[in-house]
Image 1 (cartoon, rainbow, N blue to C red):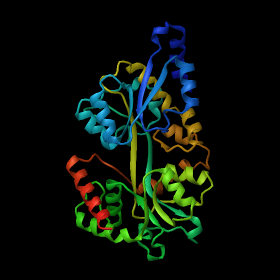
Image 2: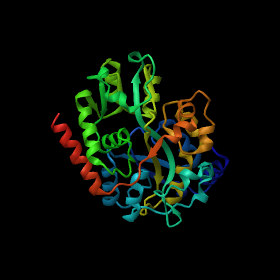
Image 3: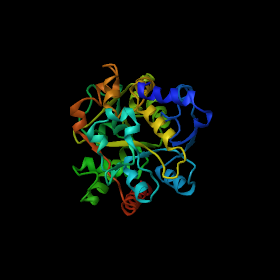
Image 4: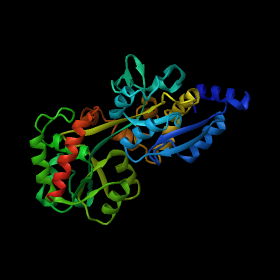
Length: 344
């Protein structure tokens, strides 16, 4: 990996064994930090071992942090939730000077107001991606350019979206020309989504669900995540990711250190490892989301999905990044979504 990290690694290996820590990571299962080959290399280089615990939702992640002080050293947090974790006193300020690869993170990510509070960094930008649509290329002569394809009667019964209230409402906002973070006409969003419901073949909940529906030839078009689309295409499915003219929902994931961590220096070393271009290039070949480290993104081969598609400035212009959401708004969206499903 980087020379800076290897220097730290040499110190850890040649000094007392007491310097080797067990780093506990809280993340989604199968999301980058728990790759076997990477953990083996990290342990060999630093002497630190890494143990994982997993969550199935952001709310579960926050609950685990609240109820298990001292249990975690690195936590994956979507930037839309970092402010809440910071306000609850769950996060430690991160000394980015101790993270050599932080220099590769561009200002638009490094200065994200969800990750930086009162001049201190509480989340290191790690990965980002888009939620837009993906098509079955066998169902289209030309790729569509608009979200309206989801409402096209020609594809009735062969459309799917994820069973997620926030994502559904944000798609409805984009389709009605509204700011996903400042929806002024929620009635219009509800009406638009109501029109969509008869179009749907099914809802999907996971990447595996989506792949099974597409492999069975049941879908023409569906909402999807950019990184997942790259993996699905890599599996041989006839899939093309499309960023429509209305825009796409963008998300940014960061790596944070809990305030109660007892291994903050080792945690910073692990974060440095995770944003290292060498790690990322190898992970990208296995279907990673886009890296928030510009040096890592630049190191990709030119034909890599995350360089060819998400590296396109015109695509980046269409990205609408999710902002923090208060619980009242979240509950409103959930009630709207449940009402739509119940009436289907």
